[in-house]
Length: 321
Ligand code: ADP
Ligand code: F6P
Image 1 (spheres, rainbow, N blue to C red):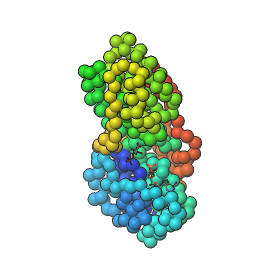
Image 2 (cartoon, helix red, strand yellow):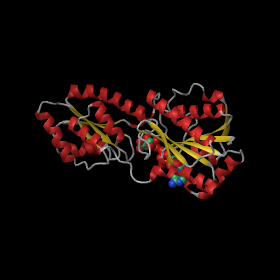
Image 3 (cartoon, rainbow, N blue to C red):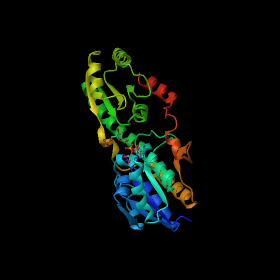
Image 4 (cartoon, helix red, strand yellow):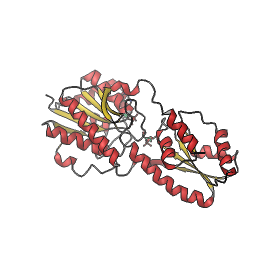
């Protein structure tokens, strides 16, 4: 029976990470497993910022955005010699299992610890980008989507008043999910995502057509993976006569209290992580597929390419006309 586990958050923070930490911590303690918090992700593992956690550390955090364990990016972790130092810091405390909450970069680091140092790792997908293979949703995506929808509502008011075209740049790295589902749920009038060819001429034509049928304002979702909304606005200005403004939503998208969906997802995934570790297993990631919590080998997260739903994309295009 595993006695001690570590937990860390790594990469970009996402709302719901704390809810996952809470679930892992409380359930592990319930099973008699000691829990060590590791601050600042792999950087803290390397710098030995590791502390024993107790019930109080898991209280009052389920609704808090960000991550109380703090997060960081630690490029040195790609070096096996650096990872060996970090692994030693775990082993000297008898930490045999590790829960890594983060994106696919963080999962890569976890996989290395598993293969090189036999640390039983479990990856929980925490990122607003929803870009991890093996899960329909990542923790933080839903909250972020709702933040974008809130912003779209406000932007819509001023777009209507001024009869403008507003290009809203949203995050997502190489994934267009945030833009796609913001368009579907927020009534977007145009959509540019990296998974699809996005000729500006097609967007320009579509916006002109909208004017002809009396639609005098537009909200266009621009996924950051396509490029900057500011640059798209400059190109678009050469093709259509409407008054255009780019809006970059930026890091406001990463904050805020997690939605109910993200809290439940984080809680269920956290519970599954503890179940796996308590059975002595590791080297896996957790996902949700078709509303069922599933596990995959952690390397599944980067095998192949995460695609968007073509059906949903087509739907968003039709509805944006
Ligand atoms: P995310 O986990 O959100 O995808 P990053 O890609 O920035 O975020 O990765 C977070 C951290 O994971 C990196 O700073 C690094 O410490 C670690 N990491 C990323 N890629 C690798 C890799 N190939 N090998 C080992 N560690 C990695
Ligand atoms: O991966 C999460 C994310 O917010 C991406 O959507 C975005 O491209 C990136 O992180 C921003 O990173 P940083 O916080 O380093 O500016």
